[in-house]
Image 1: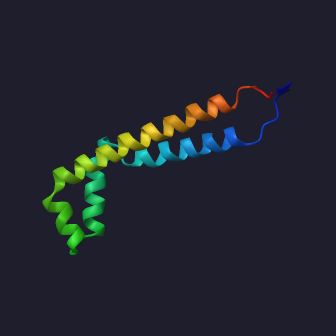
Image 2 (image 1 turned 30 degrees about the vertical axis):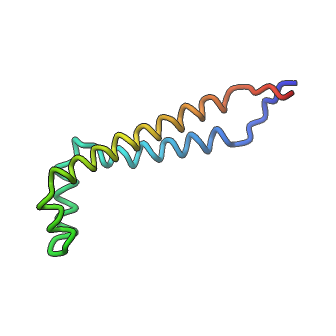
Image 3 (image 1 turned 60 degrees about the vertical axis):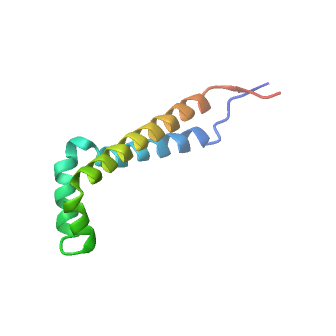
Length: 91
């Protein structure tokens, strides 16, 4: 018997994957100068602001790693959503 009912799991996985991709592209390294400027302005005068200015390279590497991890997780969710959309055979 072929089960073609959509339980919404595929749609949920797709929404989750797209959300991960959206937030990851905000951290995209091509936006790094803007990201660092905004973070420094918001956290200016605080210990976090001093750390952002002092350790720019480390912050940049961290943002790039978070971007890569987020994109990888997002694409993994999208692949799972695609496989969930296929017809499943129920035994």
